[in-house]
Image (cartoon, rainbow, N blue to C red):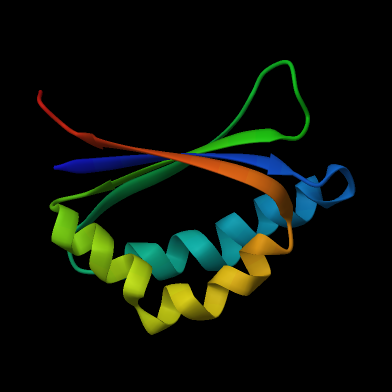
Length: 95
């Protein structure tokens, strides 16, 4: 399994839009992909604008297929309009 951790610094007045976009568009599109296991959205406890998305796919190939999919490509500009910065870490799940 592969797990991707993406940290987002969401634009201050767009936090509700970010949460709604995740729940209504991003998660459903990702969940429809082959190899998808789960995705969670976390908000840092002491910050209203720092979010962490934890994404799990069965394989690196399945995760890559999501990133290259027309669904992701279509949603990406809408997502990018909601944050000012992001960082990515990719992990191989051991246990």
